[in-house]
Length: 207
Length: 198
Image 1 (cartoon, rainbow over the protein chains, first blue to last red):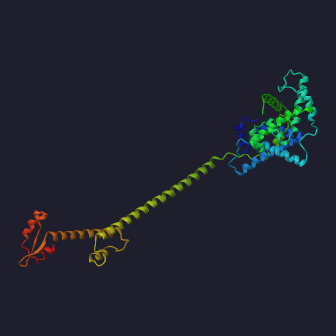
Image 2: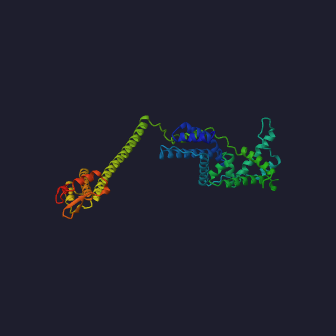
Image 3: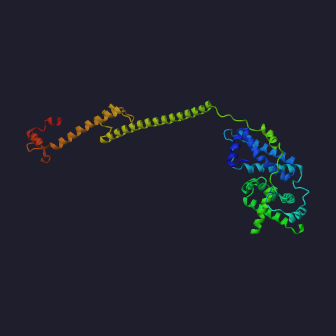
């Protein structure tokens, strides 16, 4: 992962000029996050890997086209590479989903059953230590699995914000650029997604 | 409205989301497959421009700059020369106009002027030499006319009772030498052409 935007810009500039080492560093820095974002949405490791590969193919093609159009003016990165990269990845996933006519939402999601477990045994947010009780660790894993499925059950607009925030690790400003939506809208959707998760966790029928 | 309890819940939930939604560990061959797929698509590495090429570009730029400077200089010199020539012509015309203005008789009908016209080219495009000759002639004529005028004032003719014409100089001139000369010439005969010859 690049230390800052400047190093990303430097790598992009060198990759656009044909530097394979700089391109390799970019792939190492972003491929895991792209893969994680795609996997969280499609729940298919093979498809996530394939779409990750397609995403970087599109990126390198964009660099090559840009380099051919303006040979002396290399790729001009303006600190918006990450939003653009994840937008390419999400658009690729959406296109693939449409092509396969398959929903990314998991079919085995049962929020109520998971919520019953979570309400009785929800662990705190502290990461498990070395000497953590195995039973407590198991409850924690179950809670995190439920939370993951709960997010997947949210409306697409809401869960995209959570994925981009917690999986792609983008700022809300970058999320707004990725989704091409106003910052206020993104913030409101993030807040609404958290409220829905809290409401699911406190739902009377889940007791 | 968000309460402190909700804030606490949100922070807890956000921390749990960070863990739950963290990127999954990718397959070990993810990076290699991506690099293999993109290796042939990477833009060809552009070698740095050779020094000779850079010098060539520099020389072309310098050549263009020199040509532009030369063109500007040429235009400037030409404009200056044209301006100087125009100024000389204008000066000549001004001199000629001034000379003609000083001569009240005009050009037509005056033997002097016709003579002077014959000296020069007579046209508006007279050269500097022609104008110079004209100016000299006019200066001489003017001098003669002034002398004639002075003489007519100083030596005012007066017809005497005996029919002779005497000349006297008015005292207001207070020119002793001139009075002396007049007194000496009191006996001059008015019919004599000596005075008028002068």
